[in-house]
Length: 599
Image 1 (cartoon, one colour):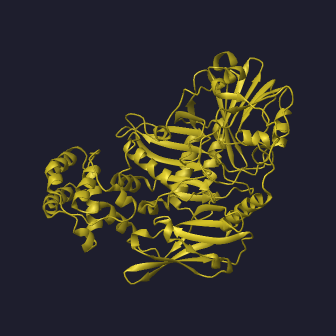
Image 2 (spheres, one colour; image 1 turned 60 degrees about the horizontal axis):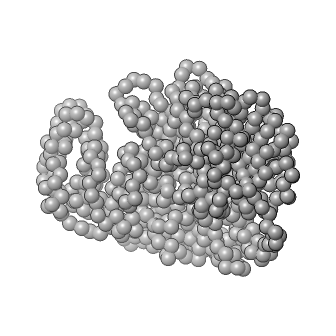
Image 3 (cartoon, one colour; image 1 turned 90 degrees about the vertical axis):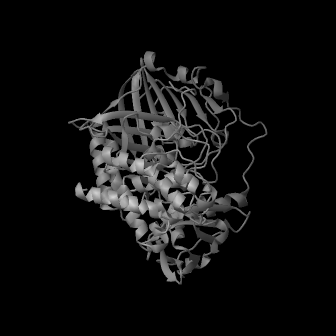
């Protein structure tokens, strides 16, 4: 069944298997931390194992360049978190992060990855990997659950895959902003291939089906069962009553103590459990405060006769998810013989979650009444967050001497009841440069500040402050941006490469080498980028001529990337200066050779 000892790392789950390379991917999430997302392209592109060392900005730059057109993340339009650190590379995430709205007015809540891997130089069907998760793309450390399936597309459609394929194809249409034609095409291609993929199932299971809630008016109810167990961090009384009606006996409910405290007492025949030391975690159905330890998995286990059905994914046992079906949710159904895959007793036993569970006991002193003022402030913050995400805001860049002025505009007036202050800042710079923009509610154009080219972005962080209790809430909106200078990406490129040392390091990465030391990550990640200088020691250690010759003989296509870098840097005298003159003379020989070879 579900063993707490069978653990994996998020980054490992998205890396290609041996012999394969990444081709394209689509991910969906309710909440997104840009800092967490920034670490994933490196693992996808370079298949590195996670390290405790700070991410290498040069490797991040190359992986973002390599993947940005083939990696799309669809996130709830109000679900992007304000990162705790600034980073100029966040600007490269603008096109990858696509804010979407649930068609029926709830939240966009699915957590899936669809990845396509290919074998270089082989004319073989791609390998499709599907991840169905309860985890968002954040640094949350809670107890979550994930299913990984792999298979290759065949010639025929598989009925069980249809709901999942339809959801992936529909993602661009749910976007709050226009989506490029290439990303629409990627969604269609992955949708088509997923509908034809025959999945390799986990041991003991005989079938797999996919359930998408909230994407249509089609209702779903779990099949009638003799016994049922529910794991869900968030619960409502009416959803539990609805589930009880689907089974002869609801055996167990595993949740967080705070969620169980808010419910009516359990019937005598039901057992309620919590994880030891369970703590609150964020999710789409409560105010988004922090990422902490605790329960976040969503699982439904059903038994009937000699068979077990396991449902897992994103759907909590709440009204919004299961009854009203306003939220977009994804569940996967796995079925097999109880004798082979286990059942509820296995789940709750010592080989399952039993060792981590404590039976829930309702507090004897009674449940403390919540502070009325605090509840009102939290409600005001959540309502203001929703309003801000719905208002049509946009960013405008205007030249201002050797820098740029960022302006924030609204299409109409709006109100934020209960909010005393609204501040904003681009996430590429430090939050201490946030400015008060409460005037935006009156449709006034608000100045966000004067910034260098490399700091310009449409990813804007907002902080809402309630007028009582000093409570605050932060979010990021990926806003349309007008007047973005064409050389913005070049400016980031120049700052990260930094000097000739960085140029040669990036060059060797393009040619296939990795793992070289790089200093001053903090300066680059803070958007400061020093001027630096030539490093003879580094140049002595890098046999760059040998690397170029090897690449030209084995994989000359890679030299096109070098050519693109040279062209980009040569466009500007400031960036051209980081190219070592000795390398320019060497590279001229290879440019001639490429032309002669017709490349």
